[in-house]
Image (cartoon, rainbow, N blue to C red; front, side, top):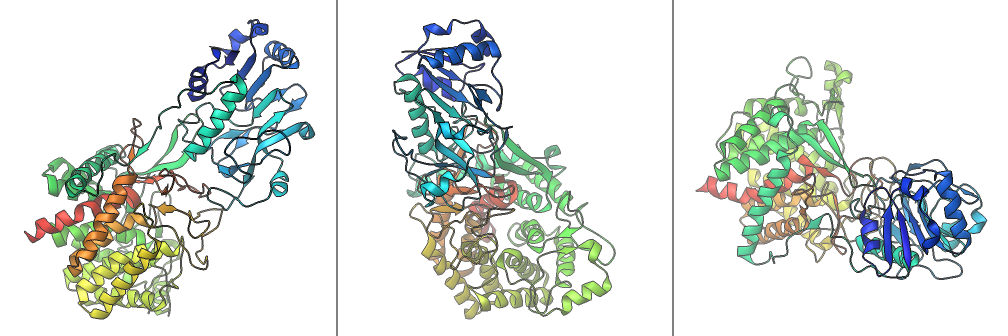
Length: 630
């Protein structure tokens, strides 16, 4: 068997083809125009861009060989024989569904309804002569399913956006760019490898002897359940996480830090960076740097943390007028204030004061708390956000006179945590009263709080604030609230160590959605951990609960949550991802995988603040507390 691969560059797919028993040769598209094709038994055509037309000189010769019965595999080619495909379009909101052919052999190991995701790809789907085609993969938007959809064959076939199809027995055609399937981190990994093996066998008649090494590896080969191994791996994970944050700094921290990396990965494996400044991410990362400096005696990291604080409490804070004390959200939402984001920006300054002896930001923090308190409703909750252009003395008074704010832990509980710590440190009772009233309101409704992503998210969000509430008041009722939430969380713990997304009654605003911002949840019981909205809060939450109660049960929960983070941290030769954590992790597959519908923070996204800095601070907090006590 002699196979000609027409491709201008090597790729994952050409390397796999070269590893099989057939004789393969790769030449450029230009050279293929002048090559005698009659000496080859099969052809693999891999253009660089989606929707390219073949040079007429090459196309005429290739079609002639194909009419002899020789097999031709086409990737994202616009036209061949009498078949024409549409203009290319993006696939980021689409998923591939496998459909078993009505007759003939399908792909081994696949069942109708199996899902594959090809990240931020491009596709050129058939436009005409569909009756001559046998689809194997079909693109469809808004698939609310994790790894398999129960949609029947006939229902799937109503969608005419073919992703992979056969024309007779001698043409196999992919609408999308698959040549760098490994670099582009198509998922699930094992399912894509099965598909690639099928393609190679169809083209060459042989099987590949090797598949490419994963671009991203997760966790550590060592058993982190052993205490000495746990400590070694925890220190290494912190070092690698801080090194990843270093690569995201803006002007060495003087301009803050970038938001992180987005979900979109192009067909060659290039991942989008989220380059803009956000106040919350910068405050959280400043906290991680200052803790790291405190524990390791690294003055340069303390300096970077202070530089980032200079942004949070400098240009991002309004100092005059009715909105004095308001903290701006980010660069493009200059006049927007989210209380949860403010809380996460200032909590590190409160940890500084409480545990590391640095109260230099307390006046600024109290100014931020004063603005938030005067725009809080009577039940201790704020509305989901406030906008400066809507604010005057009358509107501020109206907010304070409202009976109810938004009864959501996502929007309010970390605000209460910041209030309680600010009250504990400053002695201002109004902060403690407001924080206590708000958390008691939420727990009076729990578990039927207003959910955004999931019920799991609400539980994870409550652990830290309830720990601080109990520390501040010492009341048994508040201790009972903390234990109730922590014990409820154990119902959704997966054997791999993380907590599954769960939403009893599917009441969350973004649960089972596919437009705009979306949760990772498709069905209760899916083995998906969310490290942007849920699991990322637990290392800090359990560390503080352990500190506030002295209960070793919380110490074990902290170690378990950190061990889960050690098993999910990314290791890669690619510095853009090495040392970070991604949002969505499938705890059965043990890889980044979840529904890709979110507007910008789907499963492969990594936030500097929300995810990486929060996990790092939670990993370090028991050491900070121990040194403070010593």
